[in-house]
Amino acid sequence: MKVQHGRLALTVALVVVALLGILGPVDRISAVQLADTTQRALVAFAAARGLNAAISAVQGTEVALQPAGVGVTLTPGQLLDPVNDLVERLSWVMLASAVSLGVQQLVLSVSASSSMAGLLVGAALVLGCCVWRPAWRRHLITQVLLRLALLTLVLRFAMPLYVVGANGFYEGFLADEYTSATAQIEQTRERIESAQAGNPANPDAGDGSWWDKIAGSVENMRGAAGLDGLIKHYTSMVGDLADNVIKLTVVFVTQSMLMPLVFLWLLVATARAVLRVPRSTSWS
Image (tube, one colour):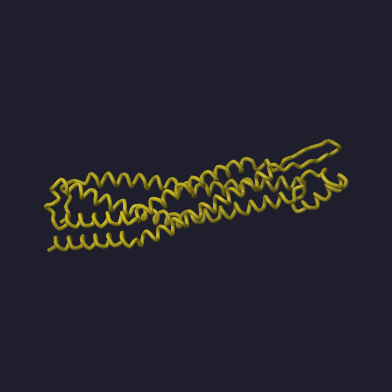
């Protein structure tokens, strides 16, 4: 009686698995979550490119002064050059993350296809036969079909479950880092553009005396205390900006590169284990 109950429970489980594979509720959830992850990557990529453009504009701006009749040309924006290198690396990371997420979307669509659903139904039938006819498992052809059926189950549900798990990991450990880092990067871009708008660039250009131009520029820069304040303003950005760029890089390297590699390793290990299922495996 216990054997019959065990076989019945396994049969019900196979029917439930087959229905999940055909109806695809997990696929829909994982598709939405993967689309959200892709959107986050695109937003972060746009923020990185915008910040890179703002820093590049500042770096190309020169401040020309003539104290005591001696011409001096300064480029205070060059203080941001080390951080700009980090931002450029971040943009490459975001591009690689977008490619990785695109591959994941392709694999997810394949696993949710009607062809995979048909294979899943066939796998459920093979496993059901092995449950109710244990003697069949002694035949070589049945052993091959059994392994292929188990492998089909793994391939059908591995990607959707991975996406759901990866999203749960993100929400639990990475979401706050992403939100704060992205917001800070956007704020820094706005600060740089604001400082650039008040930058006393080339005071010799245009009409008016040398002193009028310097005085006008200093008046516009009074909130930053002139050129010295501008330099301090850029210097204060470097540490926080570098920290936020590194945080954002860690988020996407973890979610879009390291975790897919771990998933691929586990998938290969599981497939090998399935293909090595011994003939004496008991289903009764």
